[in-house]
Image 1 (tube, one colour):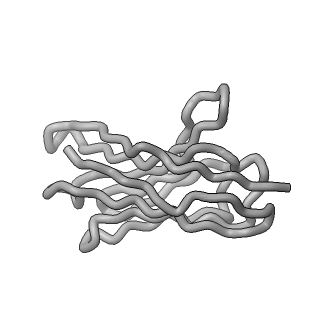
Image 2: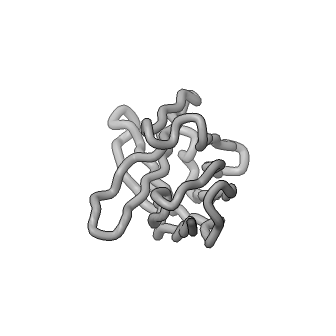
Length: 119
């Protein structure tokens, strides 16, 4: 199990950039597949970007070419660099850690950080 704390959200104008950070605690962070999700009001939570424990990445079509996910295992941190932000990127962003079943299986979430993109 890992504890996750997000930071870096805020208010930004369309076209601007933000960098979200997720700080993790726990001794098995390196084994976790990590992801950033977002949830708009009245909508379901959706995957924005993911990075596996081996470093492979995947992105939602809506953010490809604009967002970049990365991880620093030494710092137990995951980042989401968001460029060319659009008003539709406004949402609460959540960090997620998924421990594969091979290692016991677990699913942990942070408390979320608000991103507001003004037009």
